[in-house]
Image 1: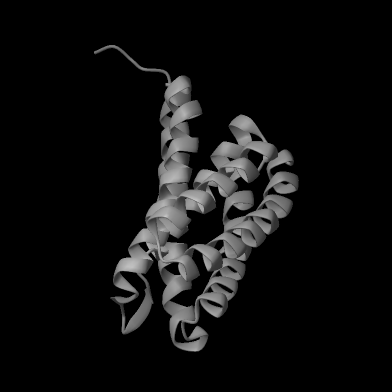
Image 2: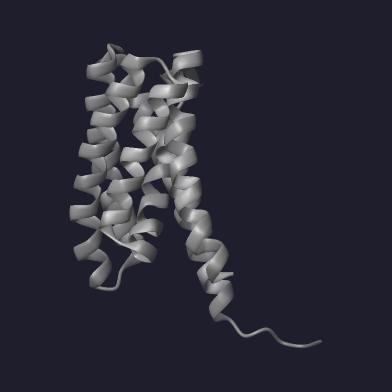
Length: 174
């Protein structure tokens, strides 16, 4: 299980970076519910924050930055150049901000607090920088972007918390 996580988290992180850019290049702004709109890659982008936390825990900061750069390079091959550029700048800035918040809080022993706090700041920074550079309207898209990213963060953090709780609980025989 640990080996699957050790190699699966970086692969999923990289895939989400590329898929976020591809989806946004292909579909642009989409409705996300409650009358809100967001770029089509927002759900993938939201997953990158929690996956980044996992990669950081497993491989360290250098691996995170390396994967962001690889994701940026792949995005230039698969997405519109202006989307890849906006994404590269936004991911790099937001992920570094996320790291700066996540690592100190995580070291104090609070995964959920660290993940939610760092992901919230990272998501906001990512959204504003990405929308601004890519040329999407910031004010109409910001609420939808944040809603979608926080929804994904909440679901993934809850899944991680639940999985960790199950793995700590001894299995009883019937």
